[in-house]
Image (cartoon, rainbow, N blue to C red; front, side, top):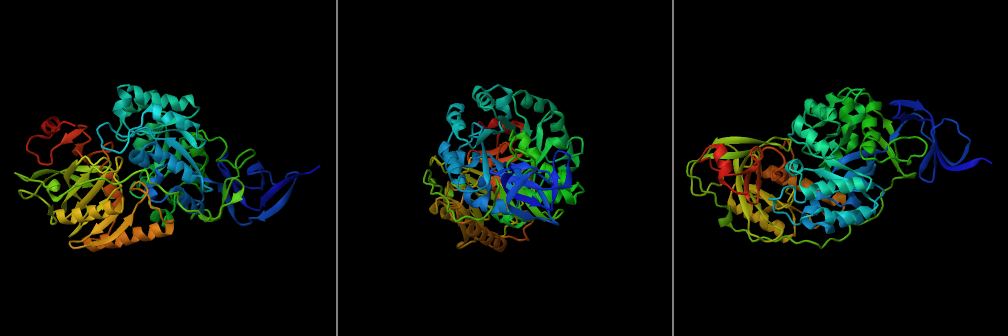
Length: 568
């Protein structure tokens, strides 16, 4: 008796990732899985789909993403990513975890269950990312252990505290061991690490990295035995500078990720499909690019049931009209064509913005005017350590001629009153301020502006909405985007969130001197992350990655002496 299957797709050129070649064949699908990739098979199909003249590739996989950076909930994010051929994401929920602890993680898991998109969770390893950060929660190994009972959990997310790994911190090593004890693995974070330090990470069991910005860095990680996720996010534009590391011989060690990308960029540029587009444009064979976008990410994360269009695999696939331009016709997830379902984000009430900052907290007296300044690197999350001269004053606010502005970080989780004040170059504001509750990874309030009054006005606005982003001029708020879910995510639809983000960008252009060449909001949000070189600002003050210590804004002593003179 002939076996009946649900569907057969015929006529297309189908990617075989095992040979990295396209084949003229058919795909036979039953109960959400592929049961044959032979052109002719002894099955009777209930539905026949003719894909003549088209290409079919495996569903794309984002190997490392903080979904919170999209600024929408998982259920809304899924509606967009499926349109772009992404069927699985491997996410590190450490943004909302830093705000709300395990309640934040559970919220994301629950909301993600509303979408066809397969969301796999790597439990956040670094909450806080460093012991001296002022975030909303602390998660130890014992706090994470019960979450391995959730079917969506896939392992341990990027371990960012290299110092904890090197000194053998008991809790950090327990988190890594728990991942392996549950049959999973642990992601690394190797920003700025040398060859010896990579070996320290590997000895601890960390087997991936997504922080490469050069070909040499990528190859060093491959040589150390790591999988490398080539990243293209809103700020982290690293695919073109690193794609040259990939060869036919070592390609199995590379996959693609976005890490951090806003909803507006996901809608206009795309997700992993954009990484593929860039790779092909750089000269990579399409078959190889789509292999990096699918099975390689699955292999790195031990997802053995996806990434290949062969018997026994999930029927996760993408139909394309144009191979080089990655023009997605439709996406299939587990044997079902993806459609936009009428879901709404789940409510979130676990946190509240708490702060009592006032103008006096922003005061920055400078006796000499010789200062350390955070230098923005457009489209990168690393910064430059600039040494500049500004006018001495009893309260420095801004030097718009040199594009040196005041930046503040206000603790918002426990109402401690901590306020860090520093200086930044690169935002090119002529008046007004920007403030937001997205500030990696502690997610306190971060703001930059030309006057203390404008900074305080923007901060007051996002406090009133219990989180968000606001742009102010010298008199009023020009635009705002409420982020009701922990101060990180919008509770609105992805279309509304994208419109609000567009309004913010238009408002920013009103207070800026030049056309935007980078995303100012995401850039600002990363200027507080101490585990990325080089100068960053926290609620405790200016942090120097090179010395891994706080330093003064004013250079009254040598750089080395400064780092020793301030206690974390």
